[in-house]
Amino acid sequence: MSVEAARGILCAAADAVEHAHDRKIIHRDLSPRTS
Amino acid sequence: MTFPPVWRRSAGSATAAGAETGPPATRRCRRRPAATPLRRRRPNRRPRRARAGRGGGARERGAFRQITRDAAAACTWGLPTAHQLASQAIALNAANAQPELRHRLEQDAPLRRRRRRRERRLALGAGQRAVPAHALLGFASRGSIRRPCATPRYFGPRRVNLRLSGQGLAWPASTTAPARSTRCALRALDQRYMNRYERGLAASAGSGHDLAVQRRRRALGAGRGGAAARPALRASGRALGRGRNFGRLAILNVVSAGWREKVHSTLRRAVVLRAVGEASPAFCPAARTPRFGRSTRCQGDRPGRHGRGLEAMTLARAPRGGSRRCATRSASIARAPALVNEAKLVAQLRHPNIVESTRSPRTATTCTSFRVRGRAHAHDLIKADGQ
Image (cartoon, rainbow over all chains, first blue to last red; front, top):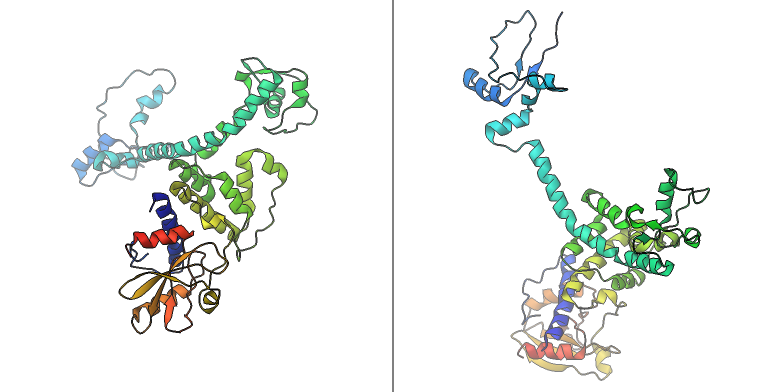
């Protein structure tokens, strides 16, 4: 996987996690394997 | 004749009097009423100097040795005085204002370029500049030249003063009005007068990332679906045309509070993504949250199995009519009861990057996962996961 592709995926995942955090929902198990 | 009491405060008396009478006495009455018994006055050990001009009398009476209470405390206990604190605050404020100053000067670069182009167009000399209207008005009020027009009118920095340039008037560069950047710099010195957006601009300038103006304009123009309606701007086009700074501040200051929150989050996102270097869904039109389940399967889009963990199975799916392929997770309630709560929580979220979790047609599986952009992304994500 290229760095650009990984960065795009991580940005999308981080955006979704931020959305969840704004609504008081915490994942507590974020890792490369689970995300 | 009675004289008002004169308080003499000096550092030497504070320390020495503390040695004499116990607690430090910073105030001593030189003249007291006759009813109170007079104390023996401590002799002034400092040699008297000759009176020299104005102020010599005050110096002779020891006015320069009179210090304030906090200065006495500073001498006694080593605390910083108010003057030292103020000096430190001024130094810190100046240091904090440096990134803002640099940012504003960078923002004024287009104005300077336009002014140079105007000067080239007017074919002015090396030491001459096109005179702004307000500069001429200022000189006219001091009587240096004739008032250019009967009613003073502000032309603004972006417009060429055609009346004066047509007459061939040119003014030496040293006599022009203070530059726009100078005014901005003076205004930027005190951050107390900044609103939160200006502080955000200052923070972005301090971090070395320039805001993506085009992206922000696009974000301001295209609100996301379901968002609060954009209120009508009260700023006129005239104000928007006076430089980029005025336009931005006018836009940011006249909108309602709800829209301000959205603009603030958008700006913050722009700063973050500028650092990351990737476009965000915030700048894209709102995407419809994909739904999976029976309807998707009826379209013939069979999910591909890409891996299986201890509790769930990872699938790669493509929503109907969408170009983005997603990674989903499917689990059996009987096998993984712990995932039920997770599925319920994620089902409360509505976000373009979160797949809406639904029950499968067999009512035994739940799909919850993050959606990623592009087919290759999902495929690579699963491959990189080692499954």
